[in-house]
Length: 273
Image (cartoon, rainbow, N blue to C red; front, side, top):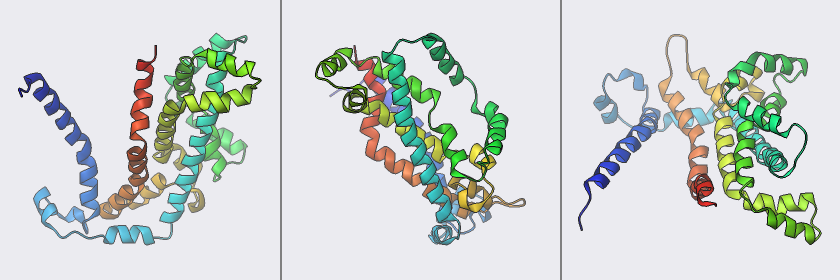
């Protein structure tokens, strides 16, 4: 069986890209398994030194790590559920309903997509202060329950669902909520899984706004808590990488479980006529 030169080149490029993407995670894991890794001057000495799980034990036994982990889980989970529901409902209205200002609303959503979130940092902070939501879960959850990206993503998908299915359901006496929960949500599952994974990942790794909106241990998230391993004079690389490794596990596990749904959701638009 002959192997085409183009296939060899393609696989070689993909292999190099895969190594480049995986190496940071490999480097993070190696540092997390070493005591005081900053003492080694080259990569060979680092690899040949003794491996230890002491950094993981210290991080897990710290007084605040479990609080940070739970906070990140709560925030990311509620924001993900909110996006899946509210973005789908909004996208359905844009795809199936005609109302005054619809084109302007769609244009506004598309326009917001190109605006960096950092621009709203100051007005959003002033709003949280006026609502007295600083150091509360509200400031970490409510502003992100619906996003322009999520609306646009689901809107594009719902437009490709045959409207005849809804017409048939209406003939059978189905109302709006029954159509949403028995037709739209099930048929949109591939793209909703993509939205859920993307939203969970974004909020799990979110740093700027949780850092601004919280200054107490009870509401601090994991990404913010890890910064306390960064000192003014030195960085505790071992414990920092151990904490980062633990914080990355939920995302890796979610991707492994839902990878087929993610791929299906990303390519489904190209397969629909």
